[in-house]
Image 1 (tube, rainbow, N blue to C red):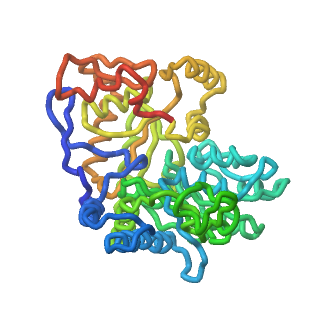
Image 2 (image 1 turned 30 degrees about the vertical axis):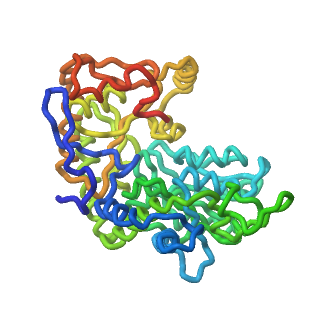
Image 3 (image 1 turned 45 degrees about the vertical axis):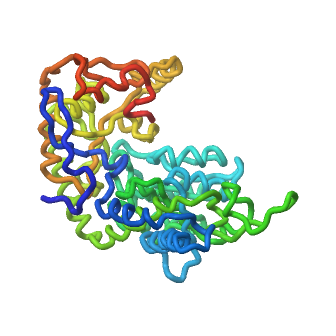
Length: 463
């Protein structure tokens, strides 16, 4: 199996503890994806023409403005918005900013109820908790919920103002039935927000949600752009989330006339480089075709899930093999701290994974079946700056550049760890970061391994 497209850094080799270098196995695509080669080329081609957006009459400014506006059009198409809709695409930094932006613009109060689920990423929890009261849809032991569970929350009193839900879990890769959920909400005239950050690189975005947010850095365009899509009317009145230049038509000392959306929502100099990158990535994904993406990742998901489940001492969290998921698997290794597993995979095999709680603490704690006493103890330690005992797991996640060889390398390494292969050098856990670092003699080649040992600023799994 080959990579589906060329990615920057796909041939990089990294140093390992045995003194050799190995091909870097990037199995952390759920966090951030590498740049497509086409994205990097498009950015390099555009840089000579880079200039101000919406702020100049010169040739370069006109080219930059056109490129920026093309990103909006492409985002609406990518999100499958009907041509007849009056939706706008607001370009922001990422999904987190987009959801914060929307939570502010909906003008909610603490008396308003937002229905959401315990499966969500923190980005789709914390902004809503700040402005409203959340009503939670619980999950079963396998980390899933039914449409009936959502309906029950929608029908409870008081009537909710919004339903917000993820399109795909960043922990287990589970895909909630979004169209059915939207139908149930719309039958009750409740608008739906879709956190599509994890879904967008892997599946078509459904057209049924009223609002959609997704990020470029998970979409092979790591240049700091994301998108919020929603009805123009939502943003046509009231103060914008950000205030400043570019969001106004006229300013006097005692009055401001805000401009029309979407520019009304984008105060400050726009990120045209990020827009160019995101446009290219969306176009490349369209050219590849979703069927090719699905077929590629289905093979990877099957090999990854089946392979991990066969390893004695490994527990795979989340739904069983009967349910379709993304090629993302979260697991634990009996007797080994999640941070140590991740550190050894990197230092000994050159495999990049994520460990920790994946910015989805309530969900992962349920999957791990962590007792509240353990949570309280970890919280007490955390308040003293000690992150060593925060519960967590290990996540391996695939993308367009993942091959079966990458998955097999992970399976072989995890099997060795689960079988008790001894540490080639001692690993020491840093109190402030919670991460493990191999203890080595001075070595320029391995400087990366000890760079963060003295502080939590370089923690690999914050959040």
